[in-house]
Image (cartoon, rainbow, N blue to C red; front, side, top):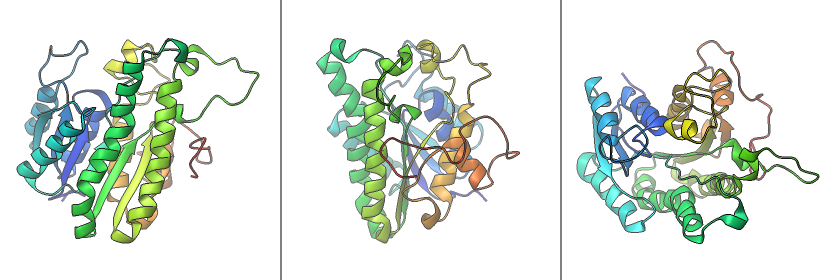
Length: 284
């Protein structure tokens, strides 16, 4: 039996990379997974990956999944996504806000429309989707929301500064992830008494994905300093299934959480020290 047998899940950004891996990990634990993203078919986007490929992989492994092509920067499409999930499988038990839109651009050169769209995807959509699924979760006294964060949430600190290009040009993305972590803990406090868990997790190391390879954040898919997407996916399953009191309000790193709960394959490996600060704003 899987840890999520009979549960229904939504994973945003599930056409490739981390989102696709999370969708597969949830499906392997028995969840019916609604995979959401903009890219339905290969070739619809310059980067490799599509909802069709993700869902076909899940079904080929004997699990259940449904693709829903949506642009979650639009509130109406967030509503359409949750409606499609309910129509397909019923009330949503697990929501994973993974989708991300990133532009590595200095603030003084950032186009306002890109800035607004980035916030719409990376922060406003998690709020809207959470709101859309919460009533049913509260009514059932059960449910989990897992938000995918980033080490970018920790700012570069005070001057004098000599940050590398990745840090200097990730101000927007880092601010969004810091806000998402604070949102996660605030919402967790609001719905704890209702039996609903909310948490945030970031990869301990950069994950090789079509996006990170494209932005040259890793040297390639075999970068020895990177973390496989399966590690973060396993941490998401942990946050979606461990007892509420142990995980709600948690803001942590993938390897940190897996080691703490004894879920790591061998208890060792690269990553962030268990005592490391997890955000410039949120308590660990």
